[in-house]
Image (cartoon, rainbow, N blue to C red; front, top):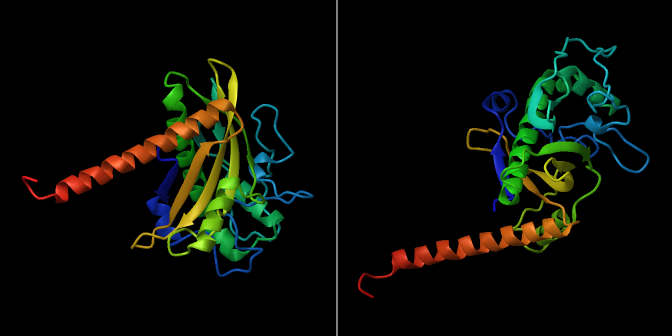
Length: 263
């Protein structure tokens, strides 16, 4: 199963900021996930999983007020996602103003960030929509009739998953074959299966990929169930087996097509 998915950013986002939204020319402290993260004592927490949670929508009460040095007004409207929170509502994304306020808390309140913040929000929303589609693909394998919901989530940019560490090590050993860049972000999503009440954790690693020839940014998402339950382990093994079998079948077709007729 395609647990790693490459996605091009929306055309409007690509036109506004060609290439990866992460500025790799900035110092290490500033070159990071386009989604700002607020520091905690030991772990940077995603601002959309902040300690100030609205009990009605389980989202942080991020300020909609403009900063004192802000020279341009930003939209305060929030976009509803396609991701169900419960049977009656869906999750909402932060507004550009809330997003910029989170940047300001990180000390990234600059004219350049202000100019591109709406594009950054668009890319953030796009990536999370694509991640949800990958989660749905996994869930439909074993639970095709259950309308799953995203119960809660957490940004973990300061922690690399074991799989990300493995591929980074592989890139160090064989840089010509494997990616040498770590993921720029990680999220853990807890999905609820309403029919059984079961909750399952998914790990999402976000990677930057080489841009399209026209400069459009491309991202690679590695979405998979966390290996913390027997059911998730079984699904991961089944998906890996299917991928290997599909690869063998494709190789067999290639050999057959190159074999001389009558042999």
